[in-house]
Amino acid sequence: MYYIERVRPGNSKLEQQVEQLLDANGLRRDPHLDYTCVLCDSADDAVIATGSCFRSTLRCLAVQIEHQGEGLLNQIVSHLLQVQLERGNYHVLLYTKSKNVPLFSSLGFAEIVRSPDETSLLENRSSGFYEYCQRLKGSHVPNFRAAAVVLNANPFTLGHRALIECASRENDEVHVFIVSEDLSLIPFSVRSRLIREGVADLPNVICHESGLYMISSATFPSYFLKDQPTANECHARMDAELFCKIAKSVGIAARYLGEEPTSQVTSIYNQVLSERLPQDGITCVIVPRKTAPDGRVISASTVRMAICRNDMETLRCMTPESTWQYFSSPEAVPVIETIRHGNDVLHY
Image (tube, rainbow, N blue to C red; front, side, top):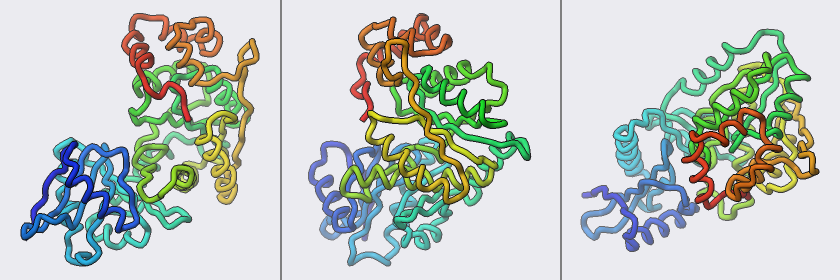
């Protein structure tokens, strides 16, 4: 007989068994988890299967090698999906080795995309990704040359504005995808508002939420890879594959990227996109970074540091009027306090 138990923080015994089980399956424990469970043998309380959640994703699924093929994964997945339903998450994604796709397909998941390194992204909706692309397609004018820009904009700066302006001048329409996951110091509602206000005067710019399919924790779990640099490259390759599928369905012919001399992660990301997108006929345009009047490169990290230090002069010279007005207003006080107490003011 088997039973399922939640692994609560601080239960070092169960946590150690989970890590050992994951290691035996060639995985590591993802640092971003908000729920973990184990399936145990009631005879000796031994952990023989495990699975976890982070937000709307399933992660770190593993079964002891000698018990594989007994249907235990089905029990773990069913339990985790129930947890997701109780959270109000009806759209659930998981990331797995491509060889496991048939197994998860039998549990109701559909493959969205497969990367060259044989990892796959799946969802529990057979037409979820298709419907997302169809909604985007409805905003595209046929025969218009369309370009894309993907922004987190934490917050929106004159550098972001310059990137969009460049795309706007060179294309009939520009689709700006705003990273909608709330993992930044500045919440999505504010980031989205500042971007939309900051490009309101550009008539050929269309803003979209990125949803779960662009640069989200759903597509970037790292537990399959033992070292972070390899994980960063794998994440970028998966996002490139997803973007190519989105671009093809919408009619996007170019993607504009900001040059990134200081962020290792973004530099890897830009390199991967520059290699992959042309294979699908998508032009990859890397735009030099805009500088402030004093010669400093404009970046969201610099602006956040300025906010931390109450350096209003730097904030003023590196942000559009709409961003400046927001951070000068009483409305921004809670966000400013979050930034000042944040641990990740500078990016990696």
